Length: 328
Length: 268
Image (cartoon, rainbow over all chains, first blue to last red; front, side, top):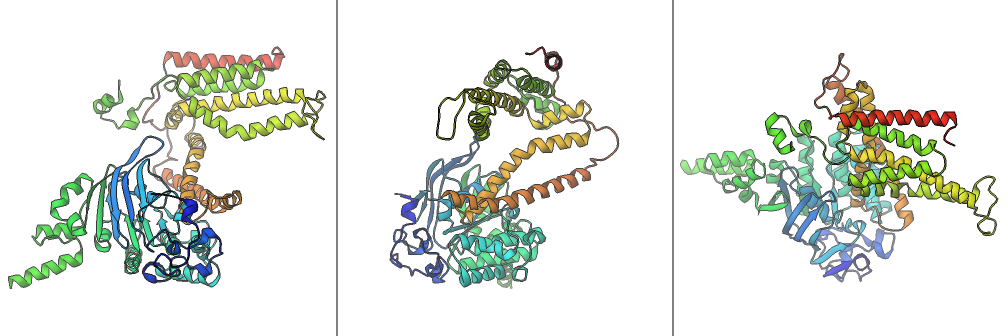
């Protein structure tokens, strides 16, 4: 089934989709608070659209291939289904197609062949601005998006585009800044912040849109331990709220600790898809090596000590403790 | 020798051993610059239709043989708004023109305005396509290496390189910035005023990004002894065969002849 943008944005009776009009993912009131919007048909919140059955949609790549205009084939027949609320990490070597995959989520790139489905609906004719209500994509380089004179104005840009105004907008901005630890910087100039904080600001500007799907491109790159912890907390909170989080990353520790599913890509294809235990387990090291990836240290140490699959430090310590108790 | 065989035999990386191939693309960059200079001067110095038509014909034939016609067409298309406005201004507002084609209320397009406008447009196309052909058939690295080999100072080489690379880099950066803003709901696919409003979130990252990049590149160059005294060695030197030299000196001689004849008033 294919859907045009006009159909996608058409008015629909509130709550006819089986979800309250003001409920976001997990009913938090996040996605499209209709009362705060400017009131056009295009501004009807996604959650209330009758054609879309759930607040957090499923995503499906159906035989998706993508070739850039210069002939570079970035995706090759990708088959991938992501259920609502899943926490998925996409890993792979540089040039494996991870970022290209992420840019398909909100329509910035359209499949050369194959289909991108959201809750079973083909999104090929839906504008990016419309899809932005559902998919928030934080880019890898913050300097490619920051433009406002104040941090708060920067964060307000996205929700304002979605039609939010007044107190609701202010609350969104404040909450997003608090989430990334920039609450005290609301009046600062974005370009006065260091790189890692600019990156957190870019993340906040996407968080403020409170989209049911959050896509993050290399969110921990350039972050110190505190910044990385903030990003982990953001992912965990989004997961608890029932949102789908899809992150492209080279940070295997972050991937193992924060995500419940790992998709490994190589040369535009999905070569591995499973839990962190499976993806980083000894049996998968061949595929990881083929994708120029190293499993997390905890996974390697666990395998070498015969503890089984221990992708995270916590699982390693638990397995080691169990092993020692069993020996006693 | 093919690249595939060159790299292993020399043990050097591809960007050092790479040689441009194909008609005109393999011509020495300085030779192409000299030819372009001749074409630019001829397009403006030779009066009437002959100069610009000859130059445009030569450029188009060369571009076709070098398989760069499509790139040239894109550049010509990009220049079309300016070209169109020049044509319209001349048709309707050429001073002293008194041979109207028709009367359109207070406006009176003139034949002499039309011919003068077409000639001007032709010169502009000849000028811009001659420059564009050098750009479309020359790797910037090759051009800079060749200029450095001929004694152009490293600062001048850097300035030339930065200037030439500025446009494609800015376009690339702007495209990514537009994507980032669209991902935050900025509507670039809707009505005109919505698109126009999108210029603000685009301009600041483009300008700040460009400034930051220049600063970072400058520091990176200094960190690699850019200002060190003495002559730099070159990793690679573009080929400069006998045919290249003949073409280059012929172009320089022709350029001098055109300028001389123009000054002497022998070109009509």
